[in-house]
Image (cartoon, rainbow, N blue to C red):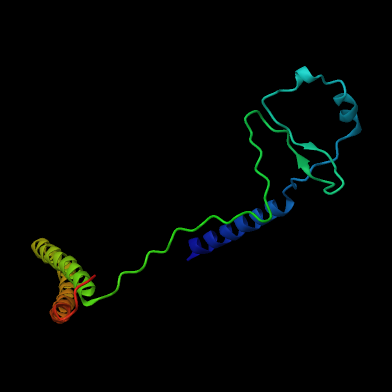
Length: 174
């Protein structure tokens, strides 16, 4: 119990330290440049400036007094201006949903039945493997799954029989 208290106290200390660090972290706003560096900056020539690094240039304008303007680099393509009444791009036509006829339902039911049948076969093998390992808990789990799957499989087979009858009485598709 004593070690748990130490861990809790240490965690609280780390949390307080993190909160203080975030609160006292310097902001990203630009700091005013001291006068000594401003006068020294005038003696810098264009050759001394690295051409590979673009530096944001602050130019106050009438609409946006604090907007940052970055000169375009070679290869930059300006975005196309937005047009107020641009023609809308036509959407793809919506494909009509197939009618859920008895044939369609029978096809889906048969597909689900085959998948569930494969699952039952896989679970029977898994049950035999668990029994061979002597894993009684896994045998019980797989047995419960098998019971559920077999009940659902019987329901699907019965539904398939009724759908087969309904599909026979259905008019042919156009």
